[in-house]
Structure formats: C-alpha cells, structure tokens
Image (cartoon, rainbow, N blue to C red; front, side):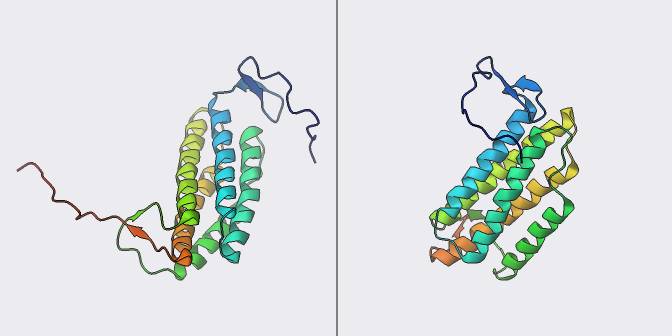
Length: 188
C-alpha cells in the first residue's frame, strides 16, 4: 500500500506542475496528466451510473470496472508501471458478450437517453472514448502499453451495451435516431 495523504493540500502544484507517481514533476496540462485525469473523470461518471437504480449484474461489472480504472490511472500516472492486463480486457469482453446476448439486434442508431441510468452510462461511454483518444495521443509521445488503449476501447463498447440494457430495464426503452424525420435537401 502506498502512502496515504494526511494533508490534502501541499502547494507544490501552485506553479502549474504536478507530481507523477514516480516523483517526476510535469506540467498539469501534459499529455500524461490529461490521459489519467480523463480516466479519473470516467471513473467518477461510472460512479454516477452506480448511484442510480441498476440491475445487480450491471452493478457488479461496473464496480469491477471502477477498480480497473483506478489501476489504469495508476499505470498512466507512473511511467513503466503495469497494472492492466489482457485478463482484464478478456473480462470486459465476456461481460459485453453476456449483456449483448440478451439484447435484440441493433438496426438503428441510438440517441443518448432511455432513463437516467442509461443516459449517464452514455455520458460515461463518451468520456471513455475521450480517455482512449488521449491515451493514444500520449502513446505518440511516450510509452503506453497497448493493453491500456485496448482496455478503454473495449470498455466504451461495454458501456454502450450496458446503456442499452439500462434503457430497457428502466422501462424507458432505447431512443432511436429518426433519420427520416425531415426531408433531406441535397445537391442535384
């Protein structure tokens, strides 16, 4: 177990830098800090989903995801650290397949909505996509393990499927994009 914070403010970041897990000081807007900060934001967004009424299996899976995201944030915060593994990605895929198996085939695009929990899950999905993009940006500058990016990619898929599950479980149903809602005008 690492050091516990007994004092929350240190004033060391007042100059626009922050300390990585290995003690290195970097600018607060560095690609690494942005990437793990967005993973933290994603974890908080999943916490909001879990504050809603959700089926027990969804709660179990998303709680495990929160632990994984804390690990992933640690991996991104400490260069060279390995905390997310292929087995974690496999677990996401198994959960994704199990949830998706119970859903009807998707024939239309879905709009974010379908009740509070589903809408919050869609928001978490979009934050996850941003975290993935930021991890890719970081990987262009510094070493980022492929498992980190793969985890985020698979998680965004899982969050989409869970949003569908939550929309149906809430009784609101999925909100389908009505692409024919207005006549299209186009070049002739």
